[in-house]
Length: 303
Image (cartoon, rainbow, N blue to C red; front, side, top):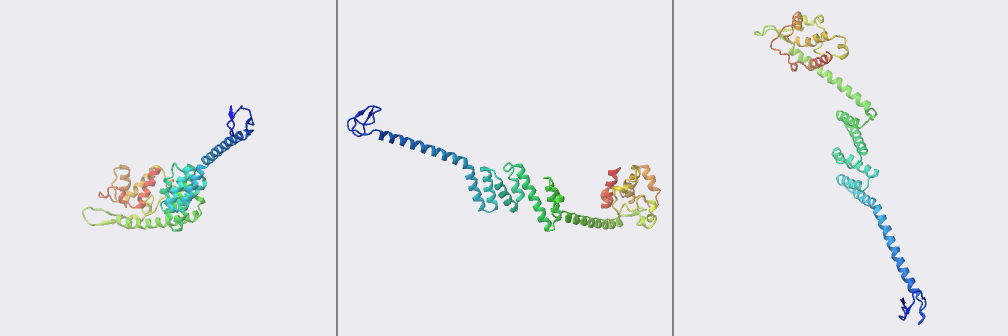
């Protein structure tokens, strides 16, 4: 049962025209259906918009933080880019983040904050690029030791240091510095040896005897005559057996008059014309010069 909207006359459900006033009731039905359809369309549009907004939410948030970061200084920009990564991970943001960190004075500290935020491979790549950049900067500033330090750090990230732009120049500079350092140590050792090689024959008087002034200058009395002023090499020592190496090592101590408790060494060195026992020399390795200490450690490693 329905009612005519024009005269309130009761009509049958399927009746289109009012039998009293002739009003066309189909218009009302069309209006109702149109309104219902409009509401359904609006609901559908709202649902679609909501789904689109939800799907693009991360992109929107990321874009917002990227824009904020692009307009800020290093520290604030880094924080904004981290928030952008939290919203959505992308290579674009990683590159922006890396660029800002490289400009920072505390770049290594800033990188340490990214653990757990940036993917491991990306973080490793950032460390590698940073260390290579630092190596270049320090080489150009002639800080060669620091350059080597950063190359060693880069090597931990599978970097082939021989591909470093200035590697050959760096090696040449390091070799030159090493040779210069050896020469300086040798000169120093010679001076120290001149001061230490005097052996006292009689403890209670002031008579001093220098073994080089007597039989010491005859190399036939030594196995290796210059082991106190020259760095020995592993190659030359491999020509001696274990027993001979023991004599070579103790020859260094014997120059200072060390009194050997071992009868074999004691008898041997007492037979040498340059050997004069000195009870004041305890055999402390710290009393030797740098070259002698180096040679002793090398010999011991081969015995």
